[in-house]
Structure formats: C-alpha cells, structure tokens
Image (cartoon, rainbow, N blue to C red; front, side):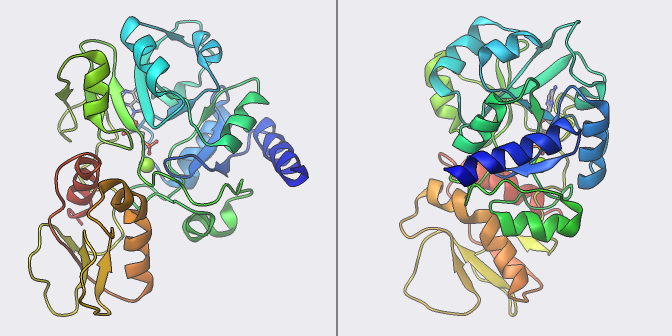
Length: 310
Ligand code: AMP
Ligand code: MG
C-alpha cells in the first residue's frame, strides 16, 4: 500500500513537471502527459516518433472532469453509464474555451476521450488537476506494450518512469466510436462492438478504412512486430513461425498458440506478447492461421491485417 502511494506521488511529480511517463491501463500501457501542456504533449510525439497529424486520446477520471473540455450528448451519456470506465473511446466536440493543447488534437475541434479502468491509472487521475493524453507506449507503427518489460524494450533509458501495474488484462487498444454525428466505429478494440450496438439499439457503421480522413491514425501499416507477416495461412512455409488460434497436440518449436479453447478474449490478451516473443526467439517471418471474425476476433483481424502490410 505504501509503495502504491509513493509510486503515485512520484508519477505525479514527473507529470506536474511536464514530463511523460508510462502508465498501465486495462487495454495496453500508455505514454502519458499533461493534456493541457504543449511542452508535455510535444515530448510524447517525439518519444514515440509519432506523426504530428495523428491526434491523441485524452484520459479522464470521470464525467465531471470531462465537462470542462467537451460537449456531451445523449449517446455518450448512455454508453458512459454502461461501459465507462472501460475499453471504449468516444470522439466528441471540443469546447471553444477548453485548455486542451492544440497538439493533442492537431488543431481540430474534436477530442477522443476515455475513462480507463486500471486502479492505478484511476488513482493517479484522481490526484491530478488536469487530464492525461496517453497514446500507446510504443514507437509509432509498432506493437503496443502490455507489460513493463515491453515498455523498456521500446524506449530503453529514454523513458523516465514506468508506473508498474502488471500485465494488461485486455491486451489490445480501446474501441473508438465517433459520436459527433450518427455513431460509427473508427477502430475495433477491446470492447466487442455488438455490445455497443445493443445499448444504442442500432447497427453501427464501420469507418475503420485507412482511406477515411476522420481518424488519421488508421495508417495502412500499424501494429507491426517488425517482421513480414502472412495472414489466413493453412500451411506455413519453412522457417516461418506459425501462430495458431487454438491449442493442438502437435508440439513444434515454431508453433505458437493464442488460446487453449478458441477463446477470442484470451487470444487478444496474448496477441502482442506472442508476436514479440516470436521475434525474440529469432524467427524472421511469421504466418498466422485464419482467426474467426467474431467478438474480439474482429479486433485481432484488424490488427493483423495492418501488421501484414510490412
Ligand atoms: P493510440 O493513441 O495510439 O491508441 O491511437 C489513437 C487513435 O485515436 C488514433 O487512431 C487516432 O487517429 C484516433 N483519434 C484521436 N483523436 C481523434 C479525433 N479527434 N477524431 C478521430 N480519431 C481520433
Ligand atoms: Mg498506438
């Protein structure tokens, strides 16, 4: 308990000082900085080597904090009540008098907001008088980090402080929803979109296409382990690591399993760490079996499709 308090205190000191630090969330680790500070936000882009036209998600403790920065609407209130804190990000209209740094939004008048669930991140947010911009804690276009050693592998000594919150429970990024107009999905993520449709009582349009201008971060190549990767593979080539969705009896050194029982939540949770392990094990190419397109399988397929553009 004492270490938790002192780590939160340390994290706050760095953030108050306009530095960026790594924080645990239920989805993936974030690289967090004061969303009201141009200095802090510029440090995030620099550390991640992120293109400046790819806006950041801002994290809040609760709706009262958010009211200062965004206009709220009915769809947001319905979904917030049901799913926040949790792995869902809402794109809302930014208020004119908001103090959000223009670098967070790339000068746009919309803001992507989330209420993370991890108890340490929440404890931290409660102690701050500003929200935190926090993109995934990895070098741009690579794999997100799901544990402390991943963050260290990504940034080495360049990261000043990591708030250790153990392994991420969900393992893939948040689901992003555009609530400015007719609600639509901008990115598949940790919350199954069918659950969102049930609450809104309508089918959502899908705008995850890379050509769409609405979510500039949806680049063709993304979530890449830095190795060539083939998807929907039945038979792997010689020397390829082969990733399978369900455990089989065959025990080959080149076989990696995402789940014991064909469970998509389990598979999402270990997806990035499996890809990182394959690289560490020395393989130069990856082949992946077809992943069922249901539940979080949709998110896995979205990530793999982008990773396969390497
Ligand atoms: P990351 O922070 O790496 O998880 O990526 C955040 C994602 O949110 C990127 O795909 C951004 O393009 C998207 N995003 C952030 N702000 C906005 C916004 N105002 N409108 C639409 N998409 C956004
Ligand atoms: Mg990212």
